[in-house]
Length: 562
Image (cartoon, rainbow, N blue to C red; front, side, top):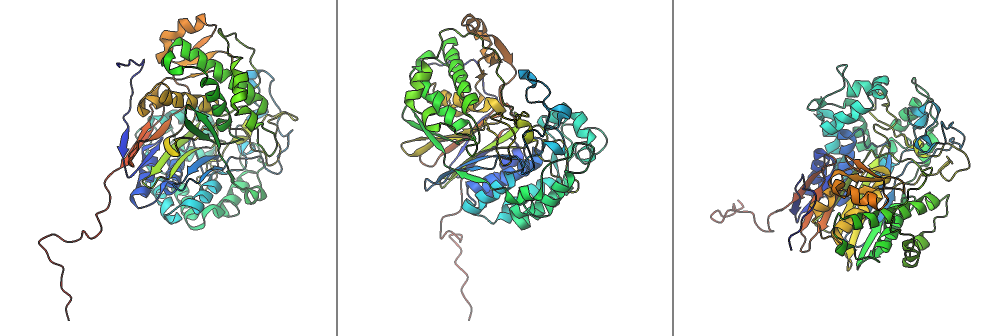
């Protein structure tokens, strides 16, 4: 049957049987592939790629950030490493002053104290989580895994248009910090695409991590330097302490498993939204013949918008750190509750008043990795906003997170600051299984738009029969119940959607660069990355010689001499 889609793909997939690495930067992908080629596994490749991404995507991710890594090993061990940032011991509900109760500025604070500078820095979790993951499941020596990042930082790398655009977006903030200005504007002006960025101080930081592991930051010299920076500079004083760092622990969490049309869809539990609400939305969609509606029709887009809207109603009511908030996971993910929710799907949309909503930065990175032995990692990590708190810790090259802006600056609220609390996240590193075998692994950056976009990716694959490349590049929609955001290829449906009651807002893109791996049987895998980031795929083929293959056929082995 001939199929017509309202878009064409910009990138090509890659396939192989020796492993696949997909990240949102070519050098991140190269670092992971180097580990697989050296005999490492998917965890080695993931940690090497993430550390390299802290160099080449410094605006998106860093060792002093937070995130989630979803690991499924070949022996069926399935665990999510929660390395999300948290509030420190001296951080209190009234530490910030809110600017406004208007929805558009609800999370803003006076002086941008929760967004910019030392006062915005939460307890970082990334390095701890990566080291824990590698210690438990890695195969290669940790020193080998850090080496590609050191090489990229010390030798330098080419600034992409993506990185240059991020620098220009917040040029004033970046240039206000001397150490940051030295990095992004070493000649006085912000670096341009094609120029070479070198991170000498950060290379030394990575060498220290290579020797000491997570202890370099959590109790070591790097942690002391980070805390010392909290009390210096022209920005607001910070609240992070050495005790916060030494006390921090990454949490190993059991994933949530939902079912959809005979598949198992597995994702992170709270404080992540994805495992709960992707399961909830799939349960609602399962009641409809989505395939018969067709991809990108007004009927299917309206249904998707309604399902996303209903999921956000529950997310606003029930999201939170499970150590502080009782999230009714079993109820929200049940088929019976989905039937109740589906009764709220409207034939015609009616716009709702905007509700106060937690903030999540869209500035994140994601990678998906699989090796030849059946080990899989899908991981989403960040420093929250572009360039995090927008300063560099002197003589270390570390760019800290600004995760405190994700807390409600008002006391007594569900997202209020409480020592030790982790804020909810929309990160959605997902794995799809069928009959006990992996079929897809996928994820993406994009803040509040992540888990609804990943839902669409899964539906594109399982219902609409799109190829992997088509599924990750396909246009998306997003809503919380107010205006309906659509990407440009859906513009022909604008009139029909408006007739259904939607106020349509056309966006250049929704969310960030999705990437994914499909498992095709017989050990073959295909990876794909989309146009919304510098996504790059590498697949390994071939391999080592067969045992015993050593000599040319016409050359006998050298005889041992007496």
